[in-house]
Length: 135
Image (cartoon, rainbow, N blue to C red; front, side, top):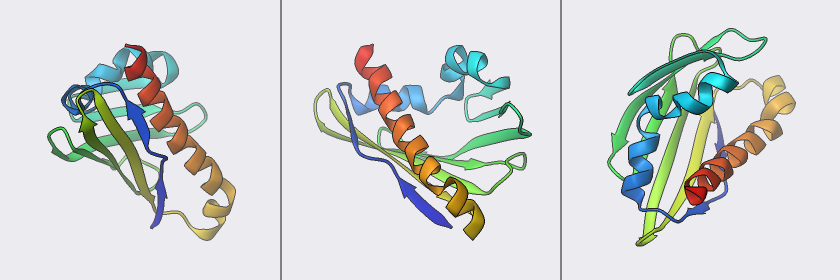
């Protein structure tokens, strides 16, 4: 498995508040239903279709309140992966977030999408921080 890590981003919220939002896929429905096809969400599971690709599913497999949320692809996912979001509250209303992804990519896939994968994870972390900091 290949490991990708995002840059650490700062969020001006309590870790508890961030965790409560990110640990329930239903909270993503207003955003995801406009950007992803066939979006369906339950608290700890979601599925969707990317344009031009088959279905994709993600499960929350484990969480430690206010610190870590672990995800994995389900049987719908085209490639095995694990992702976790780490939260560290360094002061009240100052939380750091980092995303780590481990994906099973063969050498050709790593060469083709490795850099884009890392960019995507950094974009996701920055987007989460921007959304929380704007709220």
